[in-house]
Image 1 (cartoon, rainbow, N blue to C red):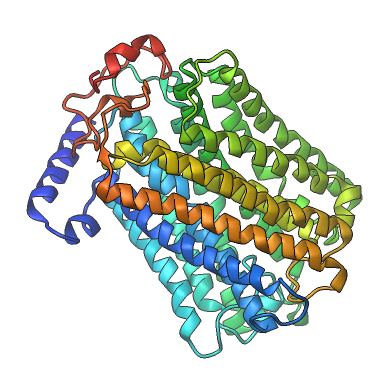
Image 2 (cartoon, helix red, strand yellow; image 1 turned 45 degrees about the vertical axis):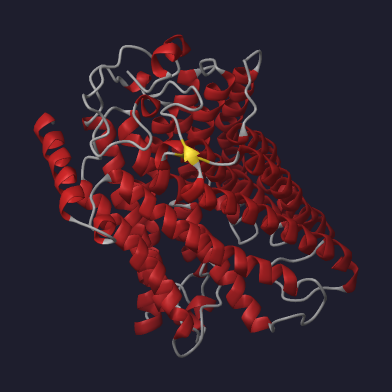
Length: 545
């Protein structure tokens, strides 16, 4: 292990010396540079997705055609979903912050397989380009929705195969990242870094990595089967060819519901890092939070069919999946109670990262509770395939994962780039995002309750008032996002130099300079205490171990 670490360190050092310009980045095997490459790509894809979402809401300002026709609208919501789910939400926190900080937090110089790590990034970029290239090919861009439901995805004449291949390639990127993280956690922990001395962010990434490795191949196989059926007309899913469309739903959701936890578990890990730092006390219930990450990952494999309560299955199956849906909410609730308990009587310092965490707890709690409405058999029948589902999904995904990605960006920005952002502007962006988000999506709960179906290009006149409120909310939300990203980009070039430990954190990443050196540590640290021991704060203030 020591020889492998030394070789990786020497390789990274030689890279920094021999390569210049863009090649020093796109050919680098340094986990920190790969994390930043992911960040640049994901922010780019994020803004493409935001633009499509903004145009969709603008179209819904009035019944009938406002700016685009129905086919274009179908393309918008398909690409919005594909980009946001497969290119931003799923890989977001693990690929960016996991790559950058997991090795540092466990006292390693790099991930276990640096070249494989770089390959994962290339696969991610290739998969994204496949989806984008399909926009310009004959037949027109994909219009199936991001779930690629059959039999429509088999029969449509739009460009389906290229985005499916893109999703397939992105799956390989996810699997390789998961394998890398699992091996790194098992093999490269610093001396004294036992499993119960690891930061909770590492625990969350570890649980997520197992989901990536075990669940992702299922959706990969499913995508290949759709491509085979389109090309060879083999009866797999299309009932006209003797196939079973429900089989596709089962296979898709066997991956895609665990994928929800690929999205949210790393976000929960970030929360468990930020709260102790800004409350200046050790996390409440460390082992319970760690094991709850594993419990969520495990139970998450068994709840996929709650997406299919109205598709057709036995009453016994529906009752079992409904019960399991309620059970998977328990470890998530445990985390929330432990976070709040950590804040109780803490020396709270209200900075931008913690404000985003508070926003997350509020929004994610709404998303989780409304998920139980959809997990209940009686209520699900009434609100399934309505705007209620759209609202729930965005409260969990955007209000959960994306908001915490913003929190992580503000929390680790000084460490990643060695610059401080404007704290006042960062805080001013939060009420715009919060108000805009709730105007945009809470109105959708009401629309869904009233019967407004999702994925529709037009609507009845009685829904217009709520759609107007929702559309105005999208304008406020985008303004907040522009202020937030504008502040960070400006600070990247003009920000004040950051200290090694501006927040007074005690995990290992705050004991190295900002930004970290090529090899992370001058000497591999020896760990002799838990990750949130604030009795060591005086030792860590100057970035010394």
